[in-house]
Amino acid sequence: MVPRTRYFVLGTLALGFVDGATGYFLFPGQWFPPSSFAIAIAGLFLAFWWYRLDSDSRAYRRTPLMSVAVVGVTIFALPYYLFRSRGLRQGGLATLIFILVSIGYSAMGYLGQLAARAL
Image (cartoon, rainbow, N blue to C red; front, top):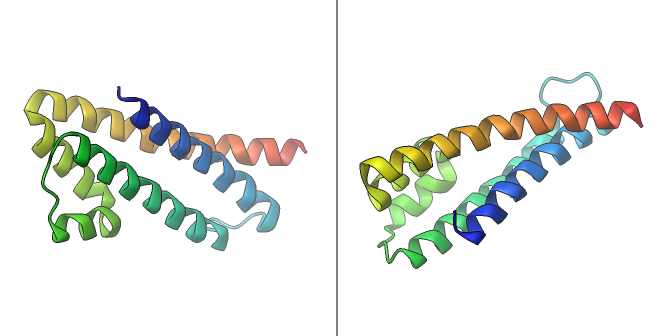
């Protein structure tokens, strides 16, 4: 795993924690607090930033449509990019890691709520 990928994973997990804690502090009891929207935009920025750095390091030619798709439909565009830039085997492994990071975001959000509740 490239060091900047580690930062992306850690940053995404940290955003999940902040999302859970902020939502519990500011909007307790709501399923989708408004603060989650702002934190989701920060997460999209983080994903796009990683996509640009990774595609530059792999000399992968980014198209404007793909750049927009990474922000607009990240859940579909990043796995597509991972398979296109890495091939079938490495792309599948990278997609699995992407799914695990997405699940980790939710788990960290729950931990953030628990930490906020404990305070």
